[in-house]
Image 1 (cartoon, rainbow, N blue to C red):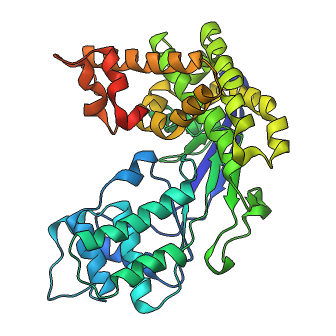
Image 2 (cartoon, one colour):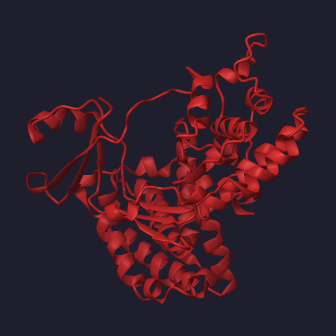
Image 3 (cartoon, rainbow, N blue to C red):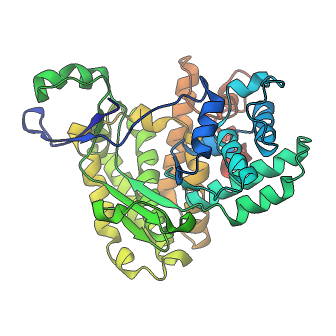
Length: 404
């Protein structure tokens, strides 16, 4: 029936958890792109679709287009998506995210249909701008790939000027659902579900009001905040929550912790997090040009930082540190590196961040020495220095892709 429950939990003891259940009935259908790429493109290209939203993690924006993507987009620009005389390119059966979206946009462009809005909900600073750059660069790659559609240049301009890319800031800790969560639903809540979404009670969603023809749901009526500029909210959240999350997870794992609530209540790790939040991140926010017109946010910064740590203490969430440890190189590159650069420019010593990077390096070294797979999109590169014949821990800082 496409419905599923969102189960928010809070508390320090299992026997006294505060549990709220919300049934989500917004989904009406599902199409898997690798099963039906053409059908997926046609659905997104329908004039009835006003908004394409995506949540694909930081690395997803850097996945290069394939020959199959180029073939799909060219067919769409030439109004030949279902050309029975021309079989699909073999790689078209497994398209990338931006290959699909670009192809759907090409259908609408070729048909003279109004564009859709592409709304990124990922933990990326300026995610709308990042999404726009990825879409336009994807289209520009088409020329490099030798596509011959006559309207290619006009399509690139259309993507730049007609499609809208609102930025968003989404804040709700949502750990991976465990088999224990599924198995205990009947006894704890009296119902069964194959895959409930488990999360914390806190939720905050900020959306830039930037949509094609102003067509969007009235999200503000359900608690979202719709603003002209998301960046101040985004900076507060990404730096004080996401960066702190990453700094905590490696130190926590090395200290023998499994869950976030264990790490955040560890005396030495708590002191590290306070150092990072208040003495290193906060000064960069106070001096950041995007925060100048947001005195309310700045005045509430220490309160927000404290709220973040209090949320981490929520035993009921059972968020695992190894989940947060995944894709550490990309998270630091996208979320943490600018903070370090800005802090050093201000003359701060950034010792908390030094501990963050050092604990990440020790974590990588331990995983390699124990023969564990490092879950990182740049895995081979980030672990190379710890392999036999590698440069050792000092080699970590030679990764220009991560540290610049």
